Image (tube, rainbow, N blue to C red; front, side, top):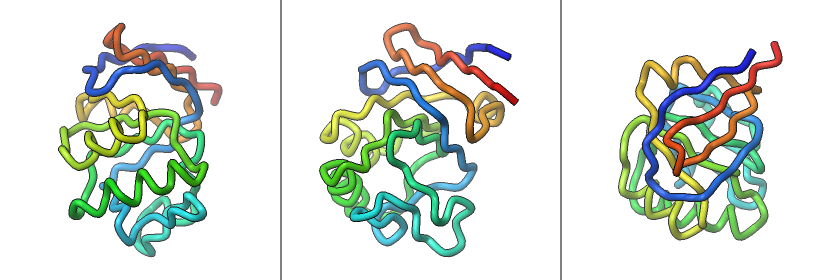
Length: 136
């Protein structure tokens, strides 16, 4: 099944890949191991999952300015996500996306609810939509 959802560009660049979706906010400072590129926050629904080469879908960041430093470090160590899809604009996440050159878009909360881990997403910020391909 294929469908599209509208998005609003935050930081440009085309990307595509398998989605890693959570309804929980993500903290990179203490919540992600930059050496492994994995979520380590014990109570997070994605604990143990890698962000590498995934389209990372989450409502927004949580935490302090350390978020962007850990995100950029993870990217520099080879654990860069293909793109970020958020519901809310978080200046810390935006600065991290720009610094690490990771495309970022915003979607509505209801459209985010349509996305599932494993969906194949084509993020095209200039086109203002995300193409979604679901195999299951």
